[in-house]
Image 1 (cartoon, helix red, strand yellow):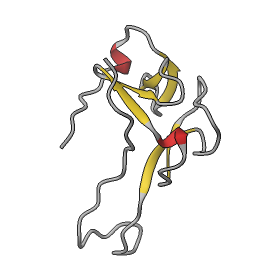
Image 2 (cartoon, helix red, strand yellow; image 1 turned 90 degrees about the horizontal axis):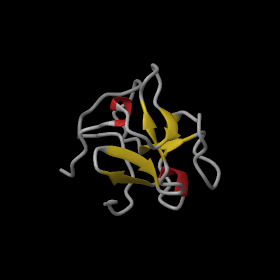
Image 3 (cartoon, helix red, strand yellow; image 1 turned 120 degrees about the vertical axis):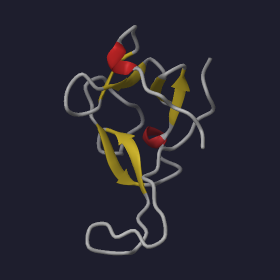
Length: 101
């Protein structure tokens, strides 16, 4: 069964020093360049500035898979060095341990 939609935001705690600053950054996972209406096969998962209205920054969990909210048949795949959107299938390269904190 599918989870409710969620955003994946980069973890931040007070006093973190990242990219030469202590300022908090709000970066989220998105498919493609974080622009557009749908995630497409072959697009990379990228880190972009968070925007809660951007649908390509929304994800759902399907068992151990992380899939696009805009097309639930497109899931994260890590068979290469980069996370890439691929059609959902039975593949160990699409399994992730995902749980809420």
